[in-house]
Image (cartoon, one colour):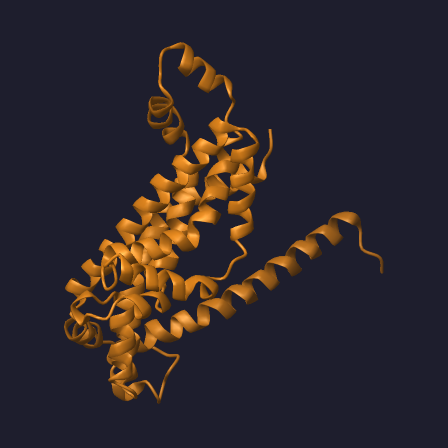
Length: 281
């Protein structure tokens, strides 16, 4: 029996949705496993690892991990690194892209090509020179030094995003601003930056999440225990409590919560930016 055109489309939609649901469940299963066991009495983790019942539910693991990790102080360390890094991303990235857009000559276009080419450069290739430079500048073991490392890692990609977005803005805006007496800096702050809110949201989500979750760079730059980021503290915490999965899972949950909240706050800007980049004209 042959299927009609509408039936084929309906079948295709059902199969596609079913496949996407399976993929979603595949990705959600580890999250459920961690959250489930973070809120469970330690005795039941090995007995019922995927089931959470009211009689096994407890917040004790979260409270204990919160206290033993010195969460508040370590959270402020990570927040400081995140804020400094995002400020560098937004200010330096947008101003560089704006300069490339305003210059629009062979030199500036060559700089843009260089930035795009540097996207493919792995961090490991520049890791040793960057760390040596931080020590020379007395910025090792500091939040600013850590933020500068992240800025050097991601600036090519950020400039690429900002430049592509700025080039979609009509040049008549700049011409009108110049006729009205605006300097290039005034046009940047009063006209272009408000129009770049969408791409700024994308930068904050994409790069901010990476900065928050990164462990490699802080392990290289930060040695002072009082300046450790949350990921460093979770790593040390887990190493010192091998086998105590209740505390390890609880620590992982409280470390992830801020980034989940950030994504929920910035998801509208992220979606608008994706749509703006996919629709031309």
